Length: 446
Image 1 (spheres, rainbow, N blue to C red):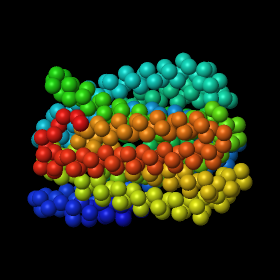
Image 2 (cartoon, one colour):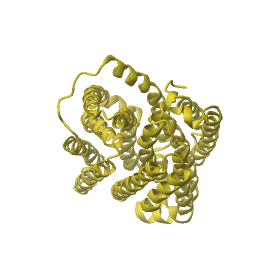
Image 3 (cartoon, rainbow, N blue to C red):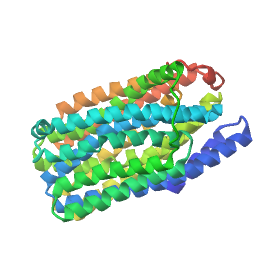
Image 4 (tube, rainbow, N blue to C red):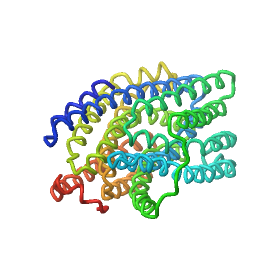
């Protein structure tokens, strides 16, 4: 899917713009090449991560698998913070690239890395000091995985800044390499330790060591010269931009992980383990769609800075994500149960229908998220607020349907359909109010 993704984006971008044809053509080709490389790398990374989960599903009981998946879910919660740091670095690195001020990117990266390290240490303390509480709250067998995972948090958050710089500078080949390295370390160590009998603890060690490895790799790939103090104006811009980013990521945290946490809290361990497997596979389309969002985000920010139209980028990306979703939903409906039953065990053999519906809900969310991130690239907050509203609706529906797998998934489908409709309506309303020629001068957050 990576090659069609990149080519489709590039072709549609070229057709959708008419100003400065030669520049747009070059821009479209860069996006196509970058999208191809990044999409291929993320497919490899996701395939490796799923290979690890297949191994865990075969070697662990459903209850143990639920505990291991809980560690992944907590990691995804922290990933929201990492993505916030990455998006902040990406947008401003892209703006500085357009302005021809690369030295400001170094200053920005050093400043963000110091903040990321502080948040990482705080997150580590929450997990390590509160390990016994989290074990009891989530009905886990051991507190040790929370401690192990916590130790990797500072490294994980700091590396996100370097990834954001590479994204903003559209250095997609280097960025793609970091995802592959992270996966290779995680899978090799996780599989080895679980095979040696270390179970959930071994899998969690694989996660933590992969954080450290990708931090080392990102440090090697990015410029490490000392940065100058940021000006008051730049810090003010960062603080203003942090607000809509935080709003978006809060909504993503709730939507991406709320159902798994509710299932772990209220369903019996065996059923929670089966739901965790459905969610793990069903969310694949969302994570694959990040190759599209990651590629288009800096391009939208740079075009907006130059006063050029960006809707063609968005519509191209939505088309690609929709195709991904259709393919994944159909594949899940036809092959989901038989494949999971053969790979994970007979407990998972009858999940084709719930898996396809879960994938459908995730596809709707992936499209809504792409619209929101597109607007966020240009500093607009309204769609982020809409996403948070959708997360509140989802939470209410999940609590009313927490008695079974089917009712939880039905709540997901309903909430994500409402969210996509609301976000699309917000975008279309904004299109009617704002013409492309005024975008460059519309820097105030809407």
